[in-house]
Length: 601
Ligand code: GTP
Ligand code: MG
Image (cartoon, rainbow, N blue to C red):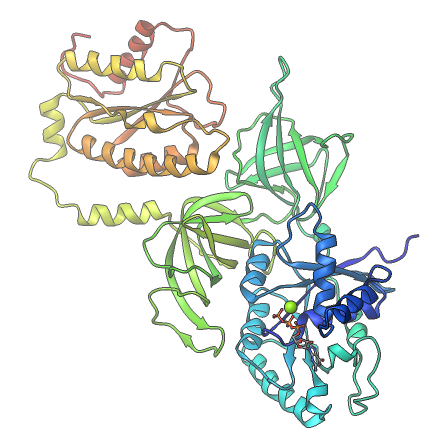
C-alpha cells in the first residue's frame, strides 16, 4: 500500500477547559482512529461508576496504552485521513506546550486554537495566539467551541470572530478561518452541522486536510549539529566518527562539508549506520555518523553544513524572540546556559529591545528584566562564537533554550544575527582597559629593571605528559637565574574533556577566564607567568590571548593535542628528556627576547 505516507504535526491550544481534549477525543472517534471497542469500553466504565462520560477520558485511556515504555509529556494522538497521517498534540497547559515547542520536542506545522463560545476570548486565547505567531506557526484555524451552550447562535460566533480577528490583526496573524463547533456533540467536526445552517464554511476535518506541508526538511540546506566525535579503538585505526542527527537536508558520500563556527572543511568519506550497512546518502531526521577523508579537529556543538549550500550564521550576538518561563526573572550580567543545536555555551542578556505581555499585548520598551511569561525581543551575547540559522531560513537550527540553575527557563527563536558582533570577553576587556587605573611606572621601565619581557607561557598537551613538571622546573631555572617568574598552578583544576562534558565545560570556562585575568595582572607587573592547560583548544587560546593583551602569550605543546589543531608556538617531542625540554624552552625564550641581559642558564 503506497497510500498516504505524508505526515503532519498539529497542535491544539486554547484556554483551560475550552474543550481541547474533548475535540481530539471526538475527532479520533469520528475518524475511526480508536482501537476497536475503546469508546464503548470507556463509556461503560463511566456508566458503571455513575460518572458522566468525557471524551478526555478516552485520551487518558489511550495515553496509558501509547506511553508504554516511553515517557511523553504531551499527549500525542494519531489519526489519518485519505490525504495523510496526523499527529495531534494536546498540550496540557501552555507552559508545557511552549517548553515542548521551543525545545523541539513537539514541533507543529499547523495549529487549532479553541475558544469557548460561552466564555469568550480569554487570557490564554490571546497568549496562545501570540505564541503561535512567535513560534512561526502560520497556519491557524480558530474553533469556536461549545456552540450548543449558546444555542448555536450566529451572533455569538460573529462577535467572537470580530473580537479575536481584531486581536490577531494587531500581531500580524491571519487565521485561515473560524469554525463554529460543538466538540462534545460532533457538530462541524467531520461533516457540516445541521444545527448551524448559517455557517457556510468547511468542517474542521476538511480544513485540516487543506493545511499545507511546510517546505520539506529534506529540501532545505543540510545541517547536522555535531553531538559527539567517536574514535575507532581498533589498532592503527585513527579514524573518527562525527555523530549527530541530521536536522535538515541531504548529504552524500563525496560531498564537501564545512563545520561552523570553526569553518574547517573536509569531505564525507563514509556514512556509518548503527548496526546497519553503510549508506551512500542520508537525509533529515536520521541519527548517523560520518567519517571524513581528512583528519580535522572539530568539537561537539559545531554545525556541519554542505560547502555548496547556504552557510549558517556565525557570531557572538544574535537577536531573538524569547519566551521566559523561569521563576526568577532574566536579568543583565548574569550567566545563563544556552542550548542551541548541540551547543552548550554561556550566554548573557545584552539588550532588551522590547517586552510584551502576551495576554494584553502591552509593550514595554523600558523594562530592565524579563519576567516570567514575558515575551521579549532581545539580544544575547556569547563568549565563544556560535553557529545558527535565522528562523526564516531554517527553523530547527534557529531554536534555542536557556537554562538557569539547571532548569529550562526560557526558549526562543533567532530572528537575526547581529553584524560586527563582539564577544562578551572583548566587551569586558574594553571596559577593563578603560577603567583600569594605572600607576606611575611604565611597562618599559619594568622591562628594563627586570631584564625580561613579561610573557604568559602556557604549556599544553594531553593529560599526564609532564606539563606540570616542566612548568615547575622552568620556574625554578628562571628564578635561579634571577628572573621574576611565577608558576600559576590553578589550572590543575582544568581537567580534560571527559564524558561529563557539561559540568566540566562550566568549570573550564570559568577557570580559563580566571587564569587569563591573573596572568594579565602578573604580566602587567612585569612577570613571566607559567601555567599548564590540558588540551587547550582554539577558542580558549583566543580568550586567554585577549585577556592577556597587550602582553603576549606563548603556547608550548608537548606531544599531539587530539582535541585541537590550535597552532602552538612550539612543539616538544614526547621522547625528550626533561633537560632537553628545558633547554629547548629556554632557547626559545632567549630567541624571542623574553630574556635579555646576562644569563647563567
Ligand atoms: P484542559 O486540558 O484542562 O485545558 O481542558 P480542555 O481544553 O482539554 O477541555 P476539556 O476537553 O477537558 O473540556 C472541558 C469541559 O468542557 C468538559 O467537561 C467537556 O465535556 C466540556 N465540553 C467540551 N466541548 C464541549 C461542547 O462542545 N459542548 C459542551 N456543552 N461542553 C463541552
Ligand atoms: Mg485537556
